[in-house]
Amino acid sequence: MGAQLRVYKRRIRAITATKKITKAMEMIAASRIVKAQRKVAASMPYATELTRAVTAVATGSNTKHALTTEVEAPTRAAIVLITSDRGLAGGYSSNAIKQADRLTERLRAEGKEVDSYIVGRKGVAYYGFRERKVTDSWTGFTDSPAYADAKRVAAPLIEAIQLETAEGGVDELHIVYTEFVSMMTQNAVDGRMLPLSLDKAAEEDGAKGEILPLFEFEPSAEDVLDALLPRYVESRIYNALLQSAASEHAARRRAMKSATDNAGDLIKSLSRLANAARQAEITQEISEIVGGASAMADATAGSDK
Image 1 (cartoon, one colour):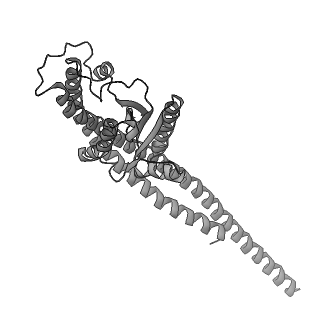
Image 2: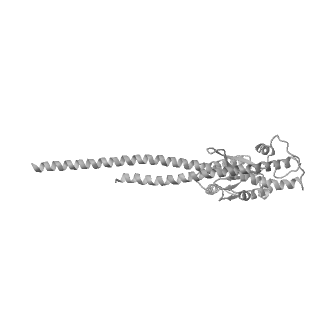
Image 3: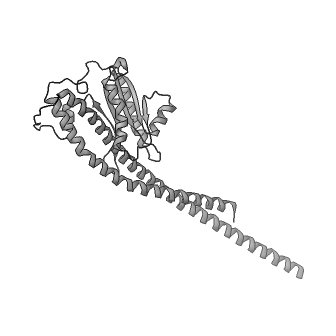
């Protein structure tokens, strides 16, 4: 076997092994998408009713709460960026990071300082490589988040927005995540969580235009807001984590399918080259045999004379 043919066969074996791996990863990601979609759907009723309750308390009382009152001149904002812990998901993490960069530039153009909170190893590595300051970070759960993970992320954010900016607090809280639209479409989006815009919250959760029920608050509306709004932040973060997880699996499935298809095309191309090299070797061997036989025949004829 010629050296060129051995090179082709070695490359075909290596690409075939890679193709098996990418195919397995594609199938695993496809199976996880369905579970992630179910979790997203299951989280929506709680988030919707919680938003309705917060809206009812805020609009049904004259209480000025720190988490629902706009600051006249905000000077500091926090951004929660959700990325993935693992790679091989196409542009999933990079698109979310770019969206966070655009949001950061917009907030800084408005004269606000920005504190960054990062979820996922890809975002942490990106900010660390560029030596950007990260206020807090969390890793290890992006592909299958639990509500306890959302509570861990929400705790320092709620504390920061309740503090004065001079004490290290923030005036606004924004979140950047990847919205799951379909198996083929996932969009990196950003949104402001706090201060809560009541009209926008009601519109997003289908409560706009409805007559909210009247409540009596015990012990007071402010105490009810103190209890409800942290749960609101946790539910928003949890929903964003779930949507990001579904988007990550969909992006990984699409990337692995593309890698598997490309590997198949490359194997076909290398197989054709290997066949051409084999045919060239056979032709050369036949030519050498024929040439040797002719030379021997000529030599024999010469000796007979």
